[in-house]
Length: 239
Image 1 (cartoon, rainbow, N blue to C red):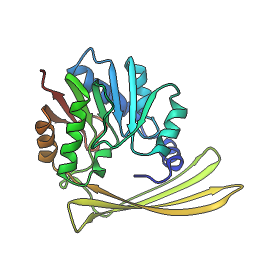
Image 2 (tube, rainbow, N blue to C red):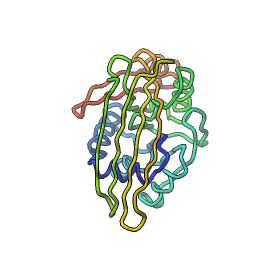
Image 3 (cartoon, rainbow, N blue to C red):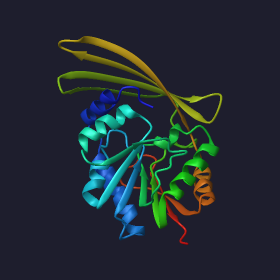
């Protein structure tokens, strides 16, 4: 999980991450399988960057995130939207939705297949019959590029933000380990530096499809024009 929501949000905005395009793909995948879907929950919604585009396409949207700091920014971006603090593996909102989305590879933070299974079961409990789940996965063991370096410098809201990351395969398990160094310069505050380490599981395609099936979904992996790891789409079996 990113430690500083404001830096996370500003960095990806400055880099021009295509939240609108990614949301459009997810919306299309939902509509293809449930044309009348109108109530959508975005799990691991972060600062609400995808959620605001979902809000323009569906009648009712809501968000869930583990980080209260992320939700604070989401509330500023989407005033009046229902946002909950909760763990995707075991949340209980006491209601159901027509569709659930989980974007930006957030499921990669799950530690193992048991946690992935628990997450899909949580999603199933919160879906109406025939509901749709769209998950943007993290890389798989076959597609992960060990040794990858990413570097960006952006200027957002008067701050110069440098983000440099280095990703390697974790030798102890099927996971990636990404070290991120942040350098932030501001006229009044000067220069600050901190590091973060993100360990993300490299689930296989079979592990995703098995977790979907165990939770009662018919699922498939979809490749889309924006590239990356694609999307997994599941439809909950009707009662």
